[in-house]
Length: 173
Image (cartoon, rainbow, N blue to C red; front, side):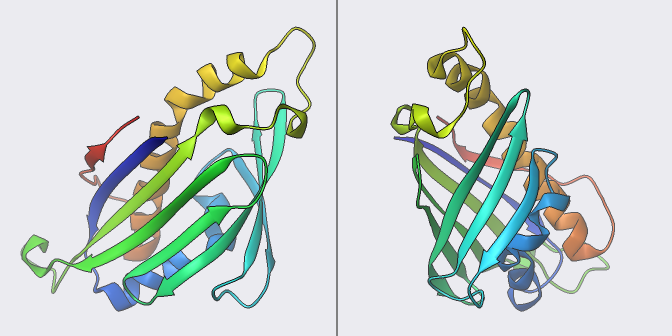
């Protein structure tokens, strides 16, 4: 299994941060490859989100299920189709990270654990002469960049304006 774990700080308390990480339907604003999100449920545990992804000549819909919520600290998810993957958004109060002029801060963690070789080749319509291994080789290095972009744009949404955010990478595949 591969794992990406990164974090950054947002200048808001966890109670103000958590609704943003919980709002999967807003995620297309955070990455260019997520084109649409459809929600099936009330947003609580058991809610399923169809995440429509598009890259190069490929399109894929990942089905993600919320498996645990402990607001405002944690939201866990698990992919339900074609790939063994799970993850968590975690929010921890970190008031000491607030710079002068900011009342408080929270550390936002994004974690994804996945097995790229568990991908079901029949789930993606590949162009002729393109193998699933080739696709995995191209996508895998991009995953960290995508995670970074999502977290940066999420912080901009939370705080109401973009700024340079410092990302801490705790673990890489």
